[in-house]
Image 1: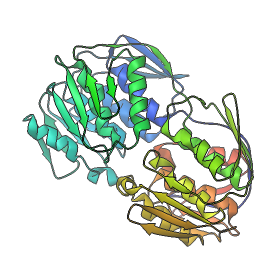
Image 2 (image 1 turned 180 degrees about the vertical axis):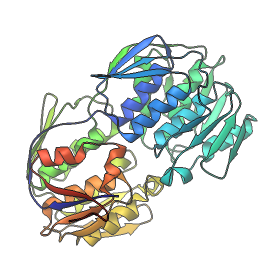
Image 3 (image 1 turned 45 degrees about the vertical axis):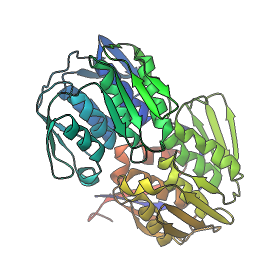
Image 4 (image 1 turned 120 degrees about the vertical axis):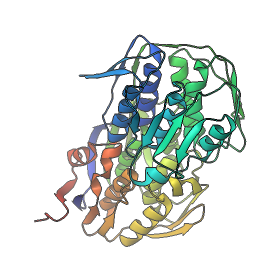
Length: 427
């Protein structure tokens, strides 16, 4: 188990933001469903992206790495090369690929580890039962499936995870008949659905978005191979933007100011909190600022909650994070995780059923904390160290490999002071 000891220091400099993990997943899948060869540029091989690559390979897609990214030779029709897909801990891989695997009609088993084995799949179980698709599961993984997905109407709740919607939007255009995905509640995380629709358009798939209440998907469509460059990830940039606010000056490059990523709202949130933030071209810069507490609706940006909690803990007044109940079924119970660990550092964070109430302080104390094996918790706690009076030790810091393998390398490059060791081997 990897651990780090971070000595408090300001972070300053320029950092190239890694590619959007959300867009990487989607581009790899779309290219894999296309006839012909696609080149996907600007890819970082985090554990989640590796899981999606391996999953598509199991479905008959040829994927090769090159210097700039991936060369993908799509498979149409799909055919199983392996009887099992190991999603590791990637919820996106699991929920995106389940409907796609049902295009083959062949028997396949999905495996995973950690919290992924118990993350909800109920919306898919209801579909399997309605369409008489064979499945075997103990309310989680492993999950064995066999059957064909049929065109028609699919009712999906919009307040569990948009990943179920995305999975269906990938698979349904390839069926012989037309389909509708009908959203039965208010749709949360609209930004992630927007990313899916945008990637589908890039690969020449048509979906009619009827005000996020219903998606109409014509059948008999074909994905068309193309070259695609993945833009920088606002959910990862948020950590460095917060670092600049807490002390120093950080320039984040390779960001698309017109991005459809829902987490781009971090720019507006920092502005509302009174942070010094500026945009020039593809670069967003933050400078040391004294921010103030605000109320943040997290329904459309759940991945930002850990780092926003850190900002709130070090802002004047009270910050409230609302509509964040879905964070309890992420890689960890993120509301409990970030509240518990920040409080260990001396913060004042109160956990509520659907959110957090944070009373800001000028500084935190420091101490030993745990990542809960959650990449976003590990990164948020690392940024919190900037305003601590004593070092911060993070247990299981290696969780960052799930999405951002080079996080601590970039942290050091910006002037951070980090010592890493394996549990049991500390000097």
